[in-house]
Amino acid sequence: MNSNEQDRLLVEKARSGDSEAYRKLVEKYQNRAYAIAFEVLRSREDAEDVVQESFVKAYLSLESFRGDSSFYTWFYRIVYNMAIDVKRRIKRRGGNKLEYQDEIQGEHDPAAAERHVETPDQTLTRKYQSARIARAMQGLSEEHRTVIMLREIDGLSYEEIAKVVGISRGTVMSRLHYARKRMQKELSDLKPEQKQGGDRQFDSSKRSKESGRLRNTAVSEEKSETQLARRGLSFNQLTG
Image 1 (cartoon, one colour):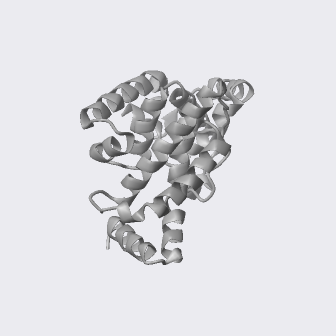
Image 2: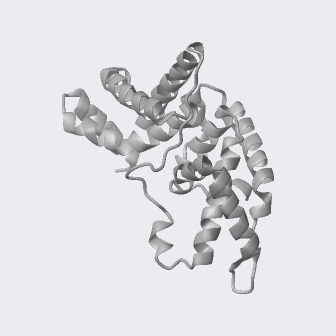
């Protein structure tokens, strides 16, 4: 049974009053939903509120879920629309909070399995690259960040992204193309030169100096790296 089939089974059980089944759906998608809401709102508190309200709305609307699309596509659409609504209300109030998360609890860290064998140089390089990715992502518009997150992190198809965001497939492809080109330009100097044996070659003193500058002048960007790097977004995906 694949993931979509498992979700449909859980939805059917939840419709029948099985609260445990819906709890499993919440646990499965709460981190991804938070990532989407945070990308739109840039506020931890608002993103958490949106996710909580979205799960409530989705639960109350389960009868309207026909199964034409996957549950997570249907649910992400709810999250995205609610986040957009909250952002509009914030703008009408004349303010916009800007926060950065330190960590998404419970996320899989693709680098964790190898960290115990990382050399200091490798650790410094990884952190430098992650901070640069975070800074480059912040240079994108909300619309372009969203399609990058949905495509490269959540692995949604063009059609699924179109349904979530409410745009055409062609617009999805256009935004992805623009975002990737923009990221490629911003991160072009990070493309590794290969040493014999495959090691990446960077000038250690320059990297150390640059990493120190990033820590001192862009702390918020470094904090937001966990949302990107810990969810598997690498500069190779964006510049390849």
